[in-house]
Each structure stands twice: as C-alpha cells, then as structure tokens.
Image (tube, rainbow, N blue to C red; front, side, top):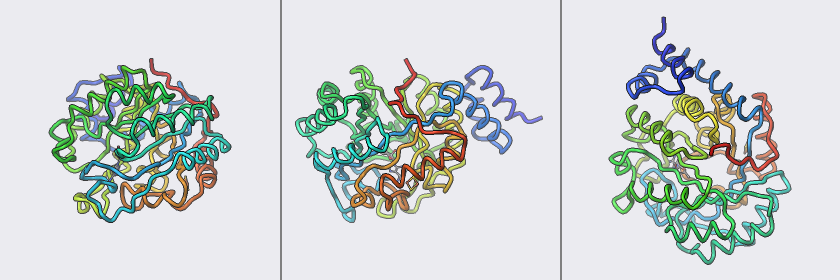
Length: 349
Ligand code: 5AD
Ligand code: FES
C-alpha cells in the first residue's frame, strides 16, 4: 500500500488536503504518485478546456530594469546585458505579425523600465487597442503605482502578469535586495485585481532557499488569492548573477507542482513555460500532460531575443515567430491537443 498515493487520491476526491498532508505529498513524492497526479490533472484540464491550448504572443519590449533581483539576468547590476527598448512601431509590427499567425492575446513583457512612463505606455496600449480591437492586451512590466495600473487599464489593457516569486516574506528577502518588498508586491497584485484586470501571479520552483514548506505556502496563497493565471517554471541560474553557482529547479518538481495547481484550482489558466522547456527538451509537452493549458510563444524581433536572457540557455532565441508557432503546434499535437483560436479568457470568476 502506497500512503503517498492514497494522499493523492484524497486530494483528488476532496480537492484539498491539510498542510501536513500537502507537505508529505510533495516531500515523499514517488513516480507512481506523480503519474497518478498527472493523469488526474490531465483529466481536469480536459474537463474544463477539452484539448484546447491557448497561445499568448510574448513581446519582450525592454530589457532595461531598475531592479536587482539576485536570480535575474537582466538585473540592473548586470553590466554585460546589452540593453534595448522596442519602439511603438516595432511593438505594433510584432502584434501585426502575431495577429496574422493567429494570436488574439499579446503579452507586453519587460523589465521595470521607467522610460516607459504612463504617457508612453498608455499610448502604446491605446494604439494596440485601436489596431486590434478583438485582442486581449496583457501587461507584464512589474510594480507600478495604482494610478498607473488604472491608467493602463483605461487605455485598454485587460490582463496583468506579476509573479509574486515566493509567497514567503523571509524567502522573498533571500531573492531580492533590500529596496524591494514582499508587501509592496502583494499590494500590487491586490490593486490589479481591484481595478478589474485578469491577474496572473506565480513563482519559481527550486530557487535558492526554497523548502517544501514554502511550496505548501505557495499552494495556500494561490487558493486564497485566486488568480486567473498561474505562471510557474524552474529557477535556472544565469552566469552573470549572484546565483550563478546555485542549483537550478527541476522539470520533475515543476511538473508535479503544475498537477497540484491544476487539481486545487481546476479552472485556472496554467502556462507550460519557456523555463520548463529550457530545463527539459520536452518540458512544455510534459507540462501540458501535467495539466497546463497555455503556451506563450515568443513574438519578439529575433534581433533582441538573445538580449532578453533571464537565465542561461533560454530556448527559442534564434527562431522567427512563425517558426516558433509551427514548432509549438507540432509539439501540442504530439500530446493530443490543438491550438485554440479564441482569446481564451479565464473561466475563473
Ligand atoms: N530562472 C527562471 N525564471 C526566472 N525569472 C527571472 N529570472 C529567472 C531565472 N533565473 C522569471 C521570474 C519573472 C519571470 C518574468 O521570469 O519569475 O517573474
Ligand atoms: Fe520556439 Fe520551438 S517553440 S522553436
């Protein structure tokens, strides 16, 4: 009799467990339990989303960043990073290409770059909104003021991705320098929700100092915050950061966490991330099998892709957007799914 497998069965039946049980389910995980959770999470994904995988076109519009997160390759102290900013026209041309490839969601992701003040960023959002009225606009550019979030929302942005990175305040301080605060990040997430954005949060798996207790806390935080989307991926070291010598997170634990998240938040949008695809060649396919239902191919101009290096060996930095879409649709088909054509708004209330 496998006690851990029984815990997994209990989780599926009750859609919850105690902290102690979740701890054991992660700490004492074995292959059999992993397989079972994958099966059940896959079933749950199909129940709500069928075989449809949503695509979001990622436009990495700036790698300037005023922050200095210890894990991140575009931290301000990394003098080796070659900095770039995309103009409004360059961003629009990415959207246009993306639209022709079938994208109906654009994700504008960048470092915390004050050059994009409200005036500039709102102008970009407004222009995309007017040019692509049937598309969702997602922003992912870090912590800003409530007024800024509101102005961007009013300009036409619908969704915001802001990973909390860790749900533990002490652990947060291990990953970030003194100028950044856990409470401010959480305040931003709450504000985004209040304003009416569909909100994505998320964390890295296997960051330095992360314990199983932390992972349990992650699951509890997700249950209480109820984000529309949860982005998770393995931490992968970058050679020009203070964490260069640290071990990376594993695809295996990331996949296990994906399944747990799918089972605890059945309707949530769950991307199979680029970091997961970097940690394992078939990471994104396995992510889908483990319960993920979103992929975010890169629409950035090929000329800047290698400059948006958050971690070493990031995949898809040499491909044209169309190639990435072709490659991904084959990968998605290989696990019995297909790319959805709709905007894919969240089913979460
Ligand atoms: N490894 C994995 N993920 C990283 N991110 C940043 N640096 C790394 C890294 N070294 C993630 C963070 C951030 C997202 C855009 O990328 O979670 O929120
Ligand atoms: Fe980009 Fe495969 S998804 S090359």
